[in-house]
Image (cartoon, rainbow, N blue to C red; front, side):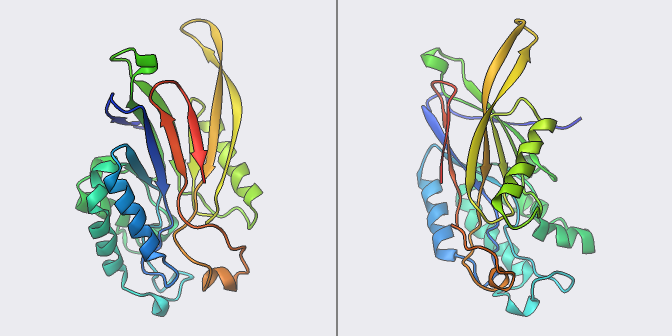
Length: 259
């Protein structure tokens, strides 16, 4: 049976900001270190800001990978130590984390689970889910009625290659709704692009014998790398870097997304 992580946050929050962070690629020459550290500092200083980690935190170029190990700015071990040290100020704000394909290289070659190592070093091994994230976030007061908190269901995964264009990525993300229906926000990474779209689902309410109309958001978050190296070699389209801001209301069931 799959486990759902539950983040039980403050009833005082009127909203929270949730940031999916992926494709940081520490160790790559294209890594935007200054911008990433500024983001971490913002989260550390903002009480209602939280993150989920969706993999490829480090570039982890090894001999069997497509990346050139000689182009890395630091070794995979140094990359791991760097990301741990710089995530420490917000470790308590990481609600969940999962692997990316760059971390899975070492899992496949040597059975070294890098993401699990990072989670343990940050003291949040209970927030780690290997393949994808199933997360419930509870906070706020529904229409001011204490102590009834609002709950949001979130499904997130790193993703995989589905072609160069954004349509293929979003089509693949939408298919995740076939496996996990009762979800408010679906999130994917990997493609180094930003996008958001929403649709409506109609759910059977077995308790009250009603049909519930539910809006669902599908979010694609980008990387923390510039346009050079691998991206240029493959003639990929330059895209906006960084994360997206998902705002969840603590007063009424409402989601908004800013890119």
